[in-house]
Image 1 (spheres, helix red, strand yellow):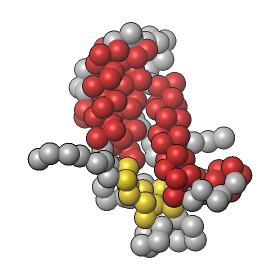
Image 2 (cartoon, one colour; image 1 turned 45 degrees about the vertical axis):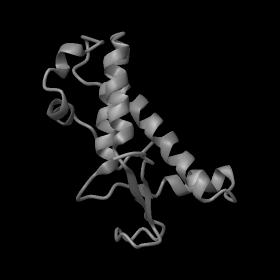
Image 3 (spheres, rainbow, N blue to C red; image 1 turned 90 degrees about the vertical axis):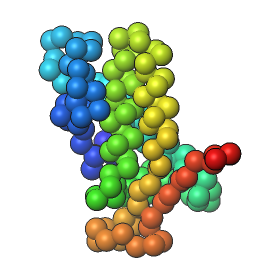
Length: 141
């Protein structure tokens, strides 16, 4: 199944965050990070799925899967894309056995708010009932 097909990550997106990202290509035969992008999309898909499962516990697995096909990023801010770019960079560093650096980007990814909408009526307009937002709980200042 195609996961989060609406969101495309390019090498240019990765270079914005990490300009030297091409130095960390695990597979020198390929000039893309398709495998790492797909792994990052799977992680993000699971995060969104867990959130939807918490919000709507009565949905069956099939209904939940169908609902996730309607998940879209908010176009002017692109929270999901930002989170996906950081997760992809983390996966690239994992592939290079640079786990400490990877954990930094994973943490940064988790610090990006999980905000998206489920376009239930497929009209492309964000309605209040369609928007989903997860904010991190923080203590202190």
